[in-house]
Amino acid sequence: MAQSLDRLRESPSQTAGPYVHIGLTPNVCGISGVYATDLGSIMVNDKTKGERIGVKIRVLDGTGTPLKDALIEIWQADADGLYNSPTEMRGAADPNFFGWGRCPTDMETGVCAFETIKPGRVPFRDGRLMAPHITLWIVARGINLGLHTRLYFSDEENANGEDPILARIEHRIRVPTLIAERQGGTYVFDVHLQGENETVFFDS
Image 1 (tube, one colour):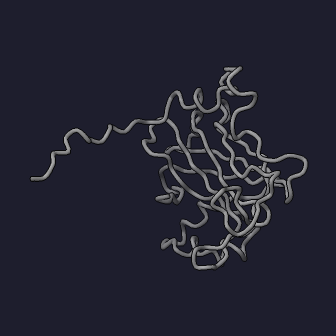
Image 2: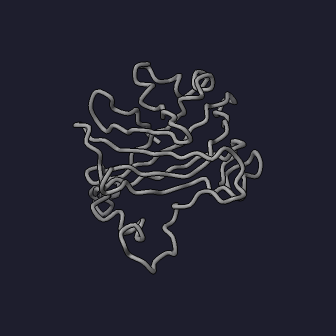
Image 3: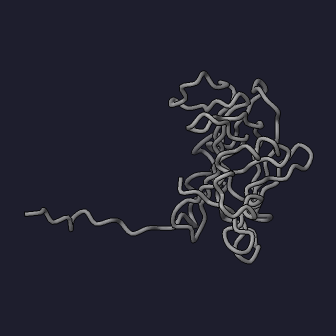
């Protein structure tokens, strides 16, 4: 006779806010003494290899209004296309590049900003090179599960045209939702949660 699994019922889902910033970025919230600096707030130092860039991201709801309580984490390769991860088997990543960052959106403007480097190209599982990109994970009030997407670079047209992930997007009109526009040394990227310009999101 099959065992009853009533005692293993799934826990109900919960949204991430409104207290996500207190737990993950206490210094931003004015809570000092937990960490000297919030984890993920610094990605580079003066010895990091590669082109220094800024990345400014807004998260917009279906009406085009910026979310002022979102939190974004980014994960990317170093300038040589290597990840700062124990699972990286292709070589040693730049020890002066953290490869991961975390930032809440500003309560006034709804923008979060990262100081990082432009990543190198990383091979897809079949060996083809992907275009330089940054992976984003987004949480906020009303989002039950963190959203995953990617940021590609507008000045990497040739590499973007060869990217195996971008090539899988059936509706080509949606590809621009993953492209950040360069403005000087900064890339500007809007994440649309809903609406006509809804960003392409990935399962993982």
